[in-house]
Length: 48
Image (tube, rainbow, N blue to C red; front, side, top):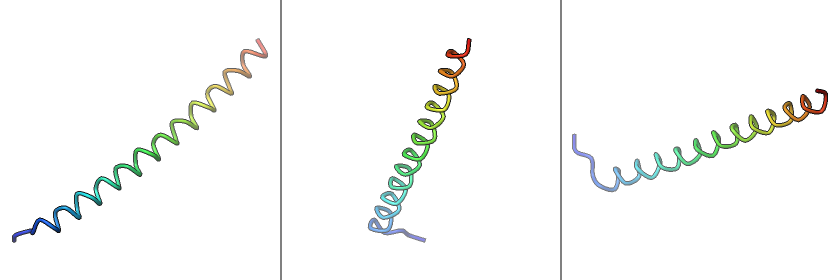
């Protein structure tokens, strides 16, 4: 089965968009984790 170049370009574009969204989502989750860690650390330091 032969895939023409237009179909291949569409698949590549879809993959790049998916990876971009994944990177954004992972970054947001990481940011939430860092903010929560910092808040807990600050609370701990205030009470020690």
